[in-house]
Length: 187
Image 1 (cartoon, rainbow, N blue to C red):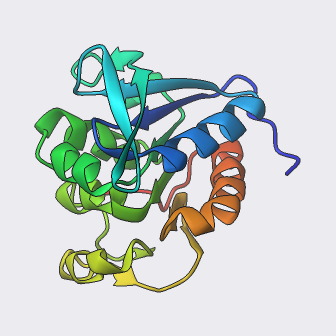
Image 2: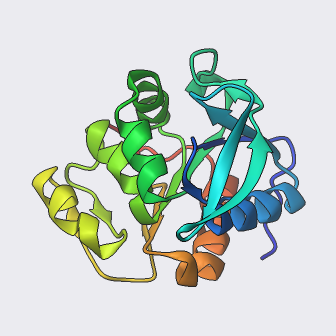
């Protein structure tokens, strides 16, 4: 990885129940590449990570989703976790925040169950994407072409299936963030 993200601002959108490693590893790598990272959430104060089915650590929220805008960031990362993604897709502010990145042609990196948020935001139609396998029907029904690959890049949209894919996911996320806006990244 040679890309530097100096001067970029990257939002990580999560709430309680996110898969901790899908947050911490990209967070650390993107920060080490020079980006300013913010944890954005509909939750106040802090959010609880999960290590599969075991409780993980708490992380401080930098900004509430109600006060956040895609205008303020260069890219978005959506970690997975069943509970996290299910709660985010039910939060209108979180869905609108995610959709804003597509409207502005900004890179989005999503892993595992995080793709549920993109289904709710109606931004996967005509796109090629991967996810945790149980989401493939939801993604296809939303108009996406679902594939079972470790990492997929489609015009600024980076997707992966699970924590085993994190090394490739992180490399491609950093690459797409470094490239900036993508004309094909749209609603």
